[in-house]
Image 1 (spheres, rainbow, N blue to C red):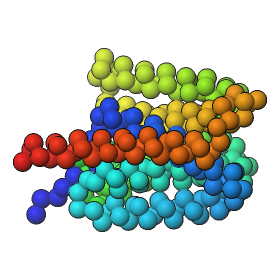
Image 2 (image 1 turned 90 degrees about the vertical axis):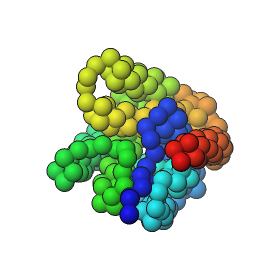
Image 3 (image 1 turned 180 degrees about the horizontal axis):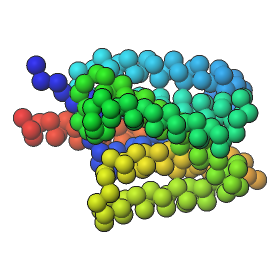
Image 4 (image 1 turned 135 degrees about the vertical axis):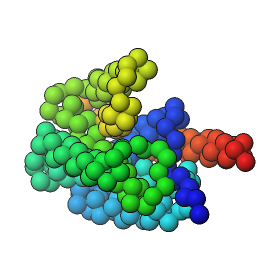
Length: 250
């Protein structure tokens, strides 16, 4: 029996959805821990349960299902927000050390992935064990992106908008390197994947933080609802594109 692909194809809509998912992860994570005042430990517990639930559904699926796949991505961005904040604000280890800790976790995951499969290709993926490596790497990437975004705003002192401009510039450079050089596309993918997280996160902070801190003060709940609506539209588009592509292949 032929194993079917389980993950999204890397395309423009993939990156748009990734950015919106990271914005949602930032605002929703802050909604649990800060707006509801549950704390970062409880926030990790809630988001971890959601992540495990949707991940089980994703691993059980026989093929790529856009709704399930992107719910897992949202799960990693939300849990990543809580993990990063827990490292800094509950363990008091700081965003610099937290970033080093998380990048180490990502590199270790990629090392074992490469050692087993001699490749870090992220599409297509059909084997269960490779998919598990994939999701562990994504969770580390999204946690790292959160820590780096907070490092820019809290430690470096950049405003949320300037932080988004810095990370956006890095993403633009990666895109240019992809089209204008022969640098390994897998390396560029993971760099872009990490830095789209702080880009979305700083944009989420820009929406939610007080005017005195350079934000728009829209609140975590309102910003999360806006992100959910945008994400729902994008998931519908992704589902339609996937269905049309599958029909054309048959």
